[in-house]
Length: 378
Image 1 (tube, rainbow, N blue to C red):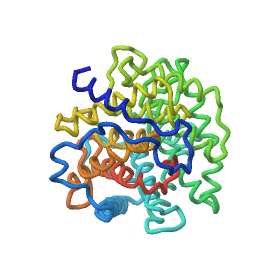
Image 2 (image 1 turned 120 degrees about the horizontal axis):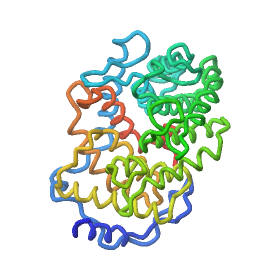
Image 3 (image 1 turned 180 degrees about the horizontal axis):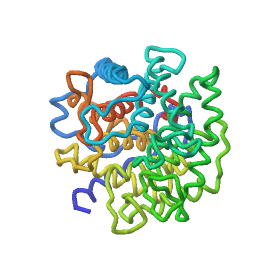
């Protein structure tokens, strides 16, 4: 860790934490005043934070872009929109989540039709005809994005069911979720993680594991029975992927790559599993915040290859952290950056996975403060 990063970490420790027990309805002020609160970079004074209505317009422009792109397909899916690779199940799941973040459900709202189409697409992929296994949400049995996309699909279906549990579509989701969770449970490796295919093989990877934990938590919130032993083993896997400096790696190998995106995803997962404090949480927060502050001061952003994924998981990690000032401090600066990156057609650019994935993730980021999506419940 550089001297600057060490100093920034110490500044973070100087911020008094909010009450350690996380209360869902806690809006009480944080006790004490921050000492030597980190200042915004010099460029921030010249570029004030955007107003809420500007961010709202940007969010809706992004959703309109997604709706237009989805309309170009007949089955509720989304095109790759310029990306080098295509992950149709993950795209449908993220698109559905983005529409639902506006307040729409499969049965009502400004984007109700689009939500319904995306949900129906996901349900159709789980019938076993394409994937070979009932409950596995994939375009084929050898889908290269496999379990990663399956986790996002389960997450989207759980959110759709929570918002609109009645009707024929709600019944179909309710019938499918136990089978989809069963796919997750029986695919867990002996180490506690998951890989890209629905089999308990020898390979495992942290980012895939994070999404399975998100899916299982969402399903449990819908009333689906989830094996607590599988969850505990997975949480332990995430913890073992953490390095001494607080960052999280791709896997258990101490030499495997770590990144801000993985650290944020690991931290968000621990918090979602009920670990809101403790040494592993504090180390992760310090490491994340040091990187965030360096970027605000003009340091070049490391190319993780997944900038929109990174942004969304940093948002989730800070949103669920006990000291809400960290989220508010970061979100104001990052939102201004996101609005500047939006293109004239309402989309955001991503060379690897295309405009639909980038736009869905940035719309989710912009909507997190609204808290309308069950995923964003504190």
